[in-house]
Length: 426
Image 1 (cartoon, rainbow, N blue to C red):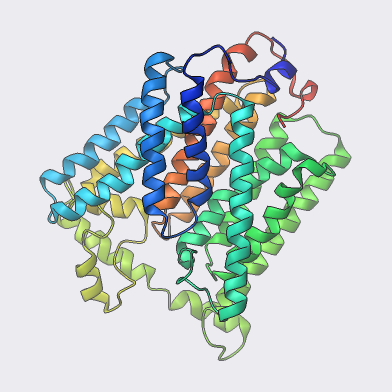
Image 2 (image 1 turned 120 degrees about the vertical axis):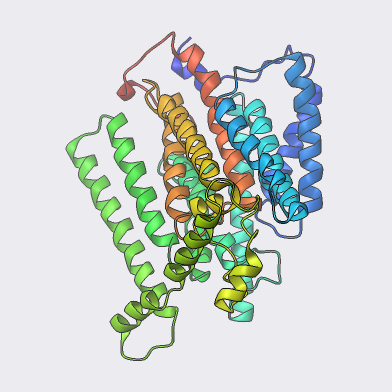
């Protein structure tokens, strides 16, 4: 089978479960569209129920390739649920486990099964781009109307939305890479980028901009390693990368400047914005509390010590450790934090295996996955925002990447080609 044939491969029409599976595809599309929209939890859960029911039936009738990362995922989930045994607030932990472990695993399994071909990928891509454009325009409109980030609407708070934009940027770079320049049918990809950046800027979230620099560097470096391009194209690419990094650094400086009221000039203000940042104090307190129960933690849920943090700092916004690994240590002990690290490492290994493929129909998705993981690591070092809708989006992306990659590897393995002889999947 040729790689070009793979790129246009259709879903098999002979499977008797296809009519049923269409309902799961519809539910999954609605699910992806509404993820960044607040106050849609009931509809989101309904979509998950439909996806779970249909995928369970279809999985039984037509099992997919062996699901990657199942043992690290089981270890992580087991340790998280085990924390109920020693949780200082079991009811709270149970609710968090349902949202952050139960629903995310369902999402991963569902999108792993449902992403079987380029047809499925195009559905997800169009849905995600349309949703991003719609929510970005709505966020910009709300900001223009109210003069501030308006959380009373259908948009999440500043941290949640900036994390959503951060998660979407590797996807957007992939979409543009596949679209190329001047292709009218992919104009939505090009429209989504400025809308995402403008709406993301309005959140005044600082860490988003260094994260976007990391995303750009990781993507471009790995991309160049897999493509054979001439010196002129490489120079253009380097110039584009430098431009992206410069603009992101400028935005980081400007947002830092906006964080506080001007006093002695822009440079002093940026320094003040860092010196007055409470994270060092929060991390210090979090580490001291983790040391009190280093093996078990206090029970699952990043807010398991929320009242303690608020009492200590006198601020309702300072209610958890503001670092994903510190939070996991507080929740499930050092072992829980190690289990999370093992899970991320296992996912990275699967993405790397896809990236090492000689065919662009596979490695481009491994590249997307590695870039997304880099974004997650960077964004969660100063806050723990891969929760709720952003956690579901991360696991949906992971399921898409591994679902498509696992299915593509087998037929492509029959026809190895040099990367320069292949075109990216459209």
